[in-house]
Length: 497
Image 1 (cartoon, rainbow, N blue to C red):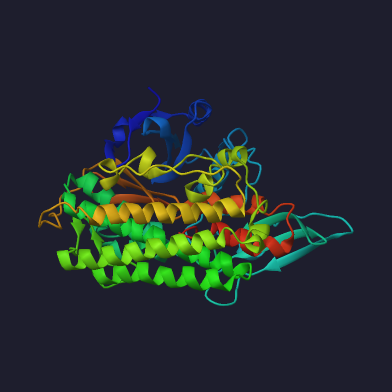
Image 2: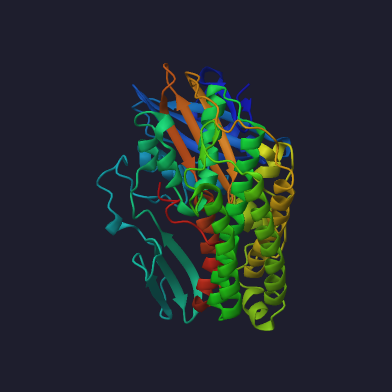
């Protein structure tokens, strides 16, 4: 067998992962993707002599993951590109090339990803980034960033325009050089909770859950039902909060100040609920390997229930009002379309993929935590425009609020919140996937002979979806970029790991 079959939150021996030739692995990948599989991880691990490439594909209908690998000797510096056949690999291969110097020959768009400090070619500089050029008398370029007004993180947007129409947008990120992945594998992996919470600040709970679940799986730790329910509650609160923030920003971008104010104020009630639970409006210090640090007693449960019922009513009222306003609809509908075929081809994930009709949700496809007992059902739309991405946030927020109210009405009993730490299984690989507010988060850990973490790989949903934004604005007026951008509401720091 050329693939090791595993699943979300399952540990497998490294020795059980097949080792193929580069050409053989490429052929196997193309065959698997032809059957409907898609990439969730593609990364290298340095050996004493060479590099081992690990590939993990998701088979969503089967709720399975399959893993395989290839070893490149030090003298091997290239392989035939997979992206030329399967476009979903284009960014994975660029990242692998930047980190290892092993070139995917025939790659259609081989450019740097984030200029990490440990990149293979230190001579490559951000100032020399090879932007795409469009020539013609009527063509002009509009450059935005990397420094933005307000609190937006650094990112450069280069528009190639004819008059007001965008022919092409190139998005250049990676300005922060944070080096999260090397830090994760430096020292004890059990002491990385604070670092994990800083990967993407507005997805601190989702990342903490993926990290903790990964360590618990690798160490054989059983988390209590009550702790699992509290974790799920926190994750859904985080989801609702980000959707409220996105809707508030979208309303502001089209001049709907009422929607902007009400969605923004409603978000405050949601994040203040997290504050009541753990003392942090972003859920810091709540989730830890083994469970949670804070309980929800009867009085707090009643308070949260009252707040969330009020929030659900507010969201319904302001949502119905917003999405029935002709002025809002005229800006949202038929703007920034990413159709189903494109979304599937470029491997979009999360709520923006579901707005294009792509039925992907880790909560349902690869269930984890409390979702294995209390399923979350997938919601989709098919127009793939700003309206669909905005309305999906409204629908998903109301669905999440109903889920939260049901959960609070029947939290599992018990007093155990935090299980004792164990020992990680040596020479193994563990994958943990979580559906965060933006979509699919992937954490992968490889351990060495003594059970120490030797490689920690991360993938944020923004890694998949920034390119979708570039495609969404093609043919649109440059003035529509703000609402297209906010309808995706992607993370800069989630990309710059």
